[in-house]
Image (cartoon, rainbow, N blue to C red; front, side, top):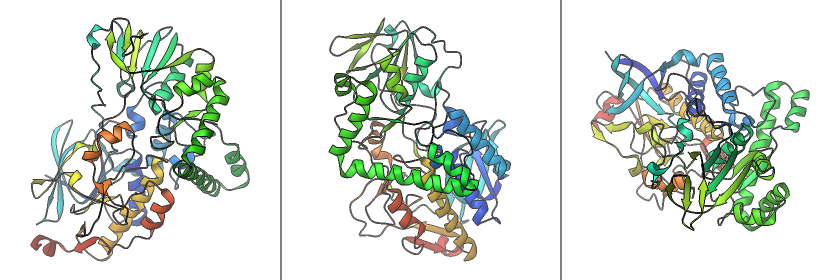
Length: 488
């Protein structure tokens, strides 16, 4: 028999826990279940186990506004984030609603029933669920298959190749030469962690430099505020401070790119003390925040390079050879272990087959309504965080919006709500629009967004929050009862 709840949340990571809390807060009469394919909650923070795994966003904005962070560090390790998520889910009873080991394969909307039918598998075999509403909190990348650049000659390499997404627990890199391919957040995290963890030498092999900003791991202002204010009040002030600073940094990079490029270069030069090194390896050909800006807590990447335990090589890879990696200019970067931190593969809605009355829907043919709902998709939402700010700043905004929509469904005794795109929608682009490789590669897979609300998502917290929190739910949404919807 089908298991029925009012709301199904797919995914028990940061977004899933966030949506569950806002649902309990605003619509306590609704039943819900969180379907999690893994055996633990946490999503990203349970999946990734590589050395040094951490957030490159401060924890005060990454943590939930309803459960203040009480630890000492501002930039924290992945395991600490996982423990925080576990504690939050337990504290608010959310963990009682999680069903683990459930992999959702399909979600079909029945117009005649005004219900979602979800097909899934667990340890006992196939299982089905029905719900009035479904929220996809699955993140935006493929858990099973990271991006594969298609390196040539892998079989010729005498050493070991690993990917950070599937880090071997028993990997022995002590006193060995390790090459980390990539220059994004994962590589910037791994290089100093491997160097400090006993690797013989670590090389970051990058095709293109990345802006790296050294940032304190500790926040003395936060410490001071927590001494004079109650815990929740202190957290709100710290969160507002950090949100404003991060937002201002992003806006400054977009408005005054040359000036910010100079400031970032000056910071790298102060840390490394070598102008040629900075110009060759830490001066990207693009403006700050055209791609994601990376954070180095306490400047640990710069420290590892300066003390000689790590270095950087910039060049294009030709192929793998027996002793390492050969570049197109003929150089060979020798390695015992190669870590391919080459990026993620984008996958929306967890790769679930979404259909309406049996007819499959392609999300790339749709538009995002306040970045939360999908045009022509009834009683459904997707929770995606920011890519230029802490994930939670966007996911909590979306979670509160979803709860607002559900509250209206209940109060008006409506059964169906669906976004409808106007004929004059105008020009559009991918709703996650940034030049970073993993996003650019997947632009054709994404729902569309415009520059006008409610069909916009700006990657600008202040603007998005102003419009989303004041959303007119009659503008762009069509509400109906089941019989009326079936006739339509």
